[in-house]
Image 1 (cartoon, helix red, strand yellow):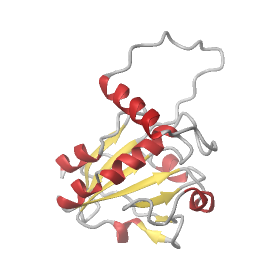
Image 2: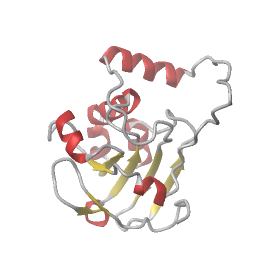
Image 3: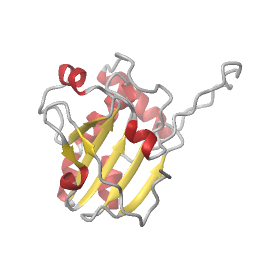
Length: 184
C-alpha cells in the first residue's frame, strides 16, 4: 500500500486495545477524528505525548473531535502499565507494526558505520517537551517495536476522508492536543 494522502478515504482496519476485544476503525471514527501513530509505552517521549493528549483532550472534544492513538505495544503488556481509565481516548495496539508498514510510516535505521552528527541546539518546542518529560519523571521502560519509528498524524472526517496527512520527519513533529483542536 502507498502512503496515505489528503483527500483519500482512509482504509478500514481491525484493531485491539488493552481492555477491549477486536474493533474496526470505521466504527470508532465519528465526527472529525485524529489518528496518531506513536512508538510504544516505554518511550518517554510517547509517555509525554499520551499525557499531554489526556490533559488537553477536552480541547479536542469541545470542538467535536476525537482522538485515537496507535502504539507498538502489546495489548496484554500495555494493560499492566496503564489503567483502563488512564486516558480519555482509545489506544490501538499494533505490536507487529503491521499498520505502520501498511501505511508506510517510516522507521529509518542509521547505517552501523555512520557516526552520530554533531549535536544541535534543540528547538524551543523540543526544549519544552524535554523539560516536561523531566518534570513528569518519565523514564525509558521496556523496548517494544521500532526504536527509530517516526510518528504520523491523520485527521479523518466522519466518512474516513483524510483531511490532513502528516508523516513526521522527527519524533517531535506531531501536533499537540491544542494544535489538533485548532485544526477541527
